[in-house]
Length: 418
Image 1: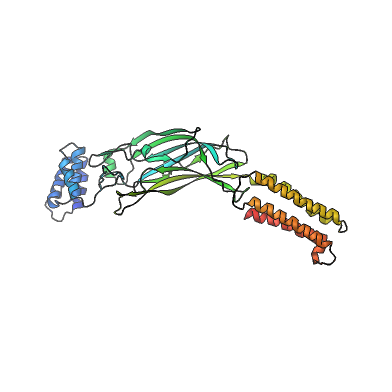
Image 2: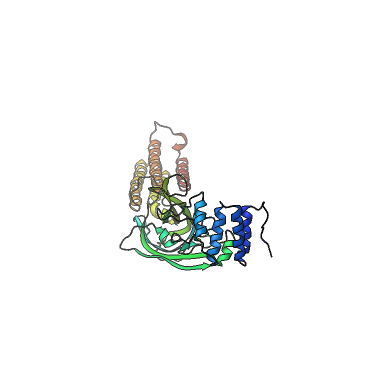
């Protein structure tokens, strides 16, 4: 059996603490004896008083209150770490609760409805879960009770309520607790595991990014906001249960598909000074936000043909005029100008399929490029009929046809791949 260190002046404060912890499980009275000897040599040690109080409390040996009171009076650091203005939550090095608390989020997407460029909102169903290593109530080393660790009060879904809202509040499912002594004697051991679960059916707003339309990928974001400062809580995606989505969604329209779900953390300033921040300087409260980004792509190849078939046919009409002899000027110019009107009509058709935006989309670039090539073809036809102007190789229909067709193909590829 290990014997105490009594009688040696060189014994350090940490040695007394470690020796007391070794005796704690089997011989708690010996632990008290070791700590009492340590306090004789180090009367100003708050850690020795605090550990002796803890052992007295959990083993019901003596009244621990005097030791707790002495430990707090000796502390050089104020443990005002709750984020609440009053009462403060005092934490010590012996407490299992550590800041920031790690909270892991799980996201399960079940279905998406009304996801269309003509709508600024969509309806979705999903389940979500939150995981923590703390129970809903935590008792500090000093015996104080707090519900700061209850994720039902700590997390909030960012949404706008409507008559379609159907949200199940976050429910506490279970908590798995290991041996308390094992937790105490194994630093960093996560012996507690709690799960909270909720479900959501609601409409969410979406700001469409149509710069790459019709080859665009939309990123819709579901946000979960912590109700405490970033010094108190930290949000992450669950490593064991990463975000997932149903493979058989009946609400998502044909032509759309979900590529993946990303996770990232952002921060929101409250605009209110945090006078009780763990740091020494006053600052605005910063709330961490867990964001699940759903990446949705569309089958752009078929949509491309549907949207631009009219413009493509208009270009083909103006392109085949180079097969007509030069002497048939009226027929050539009529077909080419007719192609321009067809392309303009198709442009209005494309614009009617998407909302009004103040940016240049790929669809706009394709329409503008086709109109420009149609005008170039008209210009070539007119020059070919004018004997006073010589355009060299463009005077030959074969070269003009090759140039116009190649420019059309390359321009489209450049816009699509850009």
